[in-house]
Length: 326
Image (cartoon, rainbow, N blue to C red; front, top):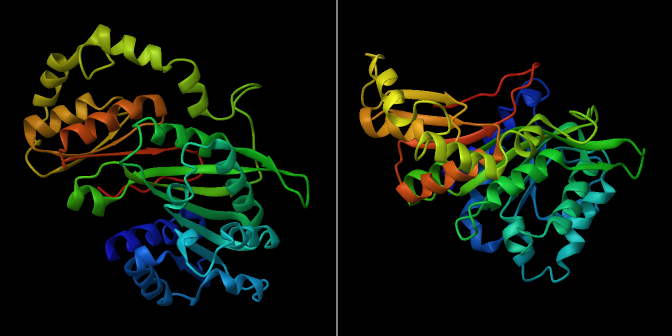
């Protein structure tokens, strides 16, 4: 659990919007089933900030905490009114620097309930400070593969309005990543987390499409188009040449050898990444913006259990770079 805790917290402290501002005060609350995760988070975060454990502190600490780490809080035996704790987020307007949720959607049984998820996202946006960080961690191994891209799309395009100022609120998408500890130790490629930041500077990509990811998934890379591209260019590939041409090009890179690391931006459905891992033993991190592409890559990633391949999604903005840990 320590590795998971460090990875989740690291995604907050290394986010570009937090490098200067930093994190000072943190609230952690973890389900007893994840007692070790709670202990690890407390120990890790205490190195940086004063930590109170338990959402009951939200009632008495006004304008105090900068971050909330929530993990399966709904299973606490002494908290029968499970929504009461979460509802305290509504009272903290523009307050927290970060909110980290671990398997909350799973535990509340709302992974596939967009309406309930949107209610939670609205609470998070209301209580986050401007540019505050949100980390949402969910183990989706037992759900259909398309659950991950569906949630990615929802987080990316979700828009609401503030009950306090009536201004538009949404998330700026930073990245979606697989939890490395789950991938390497448990061969679970579907334990993932999203890193988002609160944004008030919202601009529609056009009149009907919210973001560039939304544009790609609804125009060029619709589900039908992705399947058609693969049918044309061959299994696992969606671009001209397919596996034979791609292998010819790879062989021109004389430096490819086992265990070197490669970043594949625009990994698509992952055919090229799997090929370079299989043929040369290269460790590949594949990144793509299209959720419809990634659903196919994730499905084959989980099927093949090849630990030399990892996947993530990111938005490439003009103002800041996404950090990749190869």
